[in-house]
Length: 284
Image 1 (cartoon, rainbow, N blue to C red):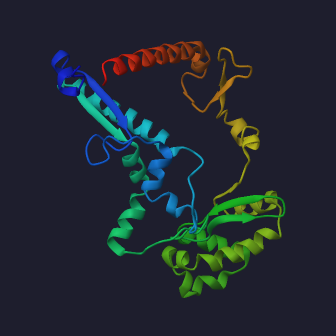
Image 2: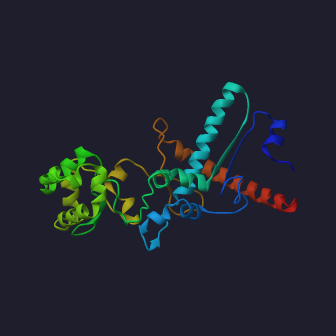
């Protein structure tokens, strides 16, 4: 049918065509199919997640969501450019390119320094303490990056002499000795409940968060107070659907959009099904 960007611009030179594929439109894998997990695997992310013996996929499909965000961002840029030039644009994203955007630091470091990093579960490798720790009644994660945070942390746990220790002189040095630092923090956390640990760490201005289960997330006090899950009516659903969107000047807009969103999704679904049937008939 000739439905490529060049032919479409002949009909409408202002058209913006946005597409997202698994591997991009050129190269030896251009015709291959893929999903979020495939891109995670090929980007180096899985190899550095979990344990060295078991590459682990992130539970959240972040490649899918980030690809959509990048596609939307690229489309916005194309719209702004069209306002200036009057010309259309082709916007392309791919799952693999998105995943590589997320792991670019790892890949570039390997290319330049040949460090050959291996997974260390949740323990950070370029700063410390940055890890998950078990308390008396749960788990927490803390992230200590930069000298001021490290100084506050050692004073909190009673290891101020570490400030004079060459093993802990900067973030990279602490990252290289992160196992020792995490061990000390594990001892500190084991003596406290989650609430107690978070209270002391928060008072010391050290970033910390409780590891929550899915059923705990929606009832977390701060999440509730911030109204991060705005529930809107959705047809044929017993409970309202939580959507993490906040439009400051239009607090009620999502409630109004609920039926409209359902209508839009249903129309798009029917359109895509019809399009798929047409493409199959035309063998495209």
